[in-house]
Length: 504
Length: 130
Image (cartoon, rainbow over all chains, first blue to last red; front, side, top):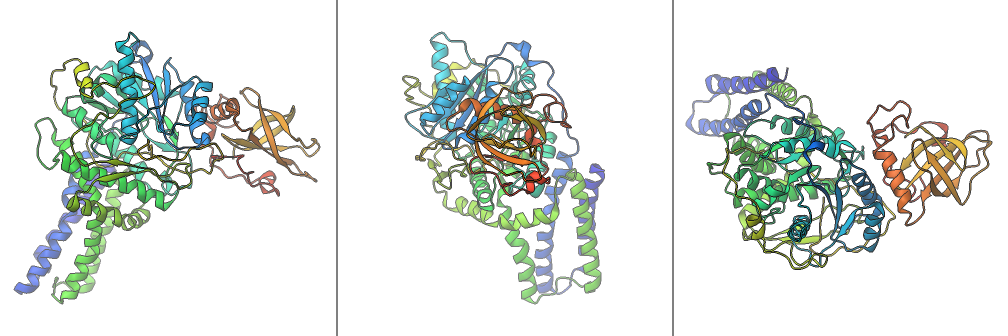
């Protein structure tokens, strides 16, 4: 039925457009110009519909080829945190420490909280902090990676894989045991799992918006194909340390470090996979304000990647599918502009007084309604019913400011500040800067617990030389997906500091 | 709502709600109201000491007790967290193997939930099981 739906949606639009051209266009030059302008506007969704029908034709949910326990990988679970209360942090650390196979759990605290250190040690996790809190979560993880490298250089066992969990994403028992097997393939750099939320009733839980369901149940599964590997969504993911070293650590040039890092990985020929099994449970944005804040950050980060990587230009290392996924995926964040156009263009055509159709109004309305209904029906089938149109339309209007902010950023190219979705911090919003410059600074630097920091290039030098492979990797748009609910906790907190690790 | 057997101070009861920071338990009316700190044992988990926040009178019906983790008691946080997310097999009747208790989404509807102190005590159920 999904295939039928995709074909029906495309066909209905094509037939409608053909009818418009063949039977309803006016003949007067002035009217014709306006009618054609309207028609071109109505045609705009067609390329996207065709691409989505092709891209979402097949979904894949394969299991890893082998059991990861036998691979002998040294694994460290990283939990970056900043200002979240104990009620949020404790279950994540406790569950991470209880995972199998044997591993280490590191709590990366950018909040320098004494109770977090006590909590970590009580659960058997390692507590890591840094003196300089630059580049937010990316910098925090890079600091840990630098620490690992220095310790390995000093004789400690080298870490093969890091598993990254946002501090509110509590891992289920299968988080490591079910996913490590993917790393039997030496070309795989990233294993991304779905993000599932347990605070039902939150503004952005799966049942209301349908966004997360569509993204993780359809789009990401559809990308488990050659040349279309999924991207890192910030949490519930495992990364090969060697690959991270090769690309200089986690990207810090943009505020969507996860997607940007993935782009760097596929540029180097690494592969990524999506593991479609619930591996962790997190907290979704609880309020409309948190939702918009999060989406705005994702959108602006996508704009940064779009311009920094010049995604509109074809690249030798990028498959056609990844080109589509990344380019159209980042452009998607301008949908708010298109939404304004969807209201404004017909209104302007109407206000102009021009005749845009020669068809009888009732006939026009009937044909338009029929075509539109078939489009919605078919698209829903193609999306495997993971969308609720009334909510989707409402959210689309709600997200108009996000699209306009993205457009404004493209015009101004101003420096962006990392705006953290409050997560147990009672509205105290942390900010850290992420400059638009493409130059990388030493982001993990100078941690007190780790001695002198290496130059960032050390990562590149540290990795073994890799031959370039066929381009494989992720694409699409939907941004890094984190969560950010604010349960009212009573645990100890510290005040937020500029530049510390946001995890939402 | 999570319905599961539990003991409070040695008395058998039924779990009504639970979170990382506390729990709400329904006890038979004839059970003396607990006070202060009590040992709570969830099915398949280690016993934990929780602080009683409130206890209903239980006139003619079950008594509902709200409990919370003592400040800084990381061990109790750990036990409740693992019970919620790494739920022992068979701990919650009707819950399939491998399904965490936190996945229970039904709202409490029983007498205990409608009782005068059905609302979770401050700090007792955070983040609450949805």
